[in-house]
Image (cartoon, rainbow, N blue to C red; front, side, top):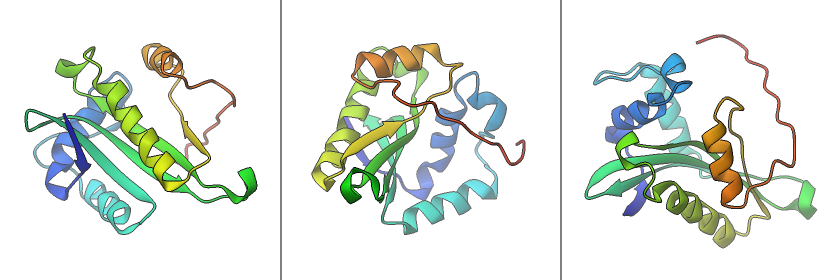
Length: 152
């Protein structure tokens, strides 16, 4: 298992991973030809030194992905925080510890960077994900809220 920054060539596979769950299937557009909006978002992430899209490879194939964002802030005595987003593991690689390794990898990057906290959100409609994150040490300490500006 290896971790690396994603490249634009990885985008179709990343979008397939993002779509491979009951919520993602309703809001993502996978395929060999994906909408231009994904490329624009990837370019913006690539240019931002506080953002990374990571892929996890098993035997040379992409088996997981996540986005890691570093957020400067005044809280925690001006400490930076790391936000983990878009965590997905390919359905044929679930249950073998890949998700745990991905999160451990992200936490270690945050620690190396000097972040004071690592945070993530997951939808309440994903009870398995909630159990997974709690099992590895995340705690539901805050109530997250979202205001969707438009339906996709």
